[in-house]
Structures are given as C-alpha cells and as structure tokens.
Length: 144
Image 1 (cartoon, helix red, strand yellow):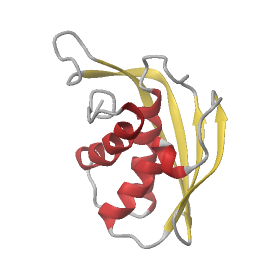
Image 2 (tube, helix red, strand yellow):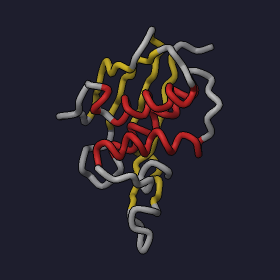
Image 3 (tube, rainbow, N blue to C red):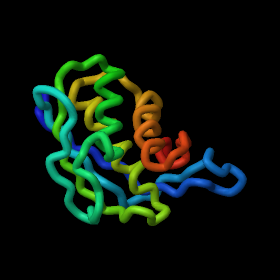
C-alpha cells in the first residue's frame, strides 16, 4: 500500500447559463495538486506552494484540510494525514480555486487509504469544504 498519493483537480467554471449554482464545467490543463501522506492522527497541512498568498496552513480553515477530514470520517479511519498543496489557481479568479484543492484532497485521501468512496461520494466532502469558505452548499465547482 502506498504511503503517499498525489492527486490533481482541474480548474472549473461554475454558474453556467441558467444553471446558477448548479451547473459547472471542468477546464483541461490547469488546476491544483494535493499530496497526501499517512500520519498518526489528525489532518495537517505541512506546505502550500505556488499561488498561495494568504492561504491558511490551519487544516480546519483550508478546503483541502476540511475535505481530508470529511473523507477520513466517511471511511471511519482513525489514522491521520499530512497534506502538501501546490496551487496553480489564484483565489478569487472564478476558476474554482478552493474547490480544486478540496476535490484533489478528497480524492487523494480516499486513494491513500484504499477507500471505497466513488467519485460521486467524494463530491460531499469537497462541497462541505467549499461551503466553509463560500458560505453556501453548492457543488457547481466541486462536482466537475
């Protein structure tokens, strides 16, 4: 079983046409990377590189950390995880920056622990993380 998993989630555009807060599109080529490594307990963000100005290392205030925590809960895992995030998307760009980190983190943690969650299952933890920063529970950026 691998000790580290690296995942990529692409940029997205939400609020497509009449599907405000419902429809979104993934964009090929740009996005964020999250590397997840097993740890004894809890969720820790050890590094954020790239376009990271002002992003919190506190896992409870970062979408990648929140998504990781929610996946561990869904999998009923008592171990922890350390995350390294590489941001290629600037915050507030309209490209789903926080959602990309959340989606990549959710996917990486599920794979790291050989989880049974499907891609559809992973929308929930990513969207819960996105809700923390946006104030609304919308999957228009996390689902694509």
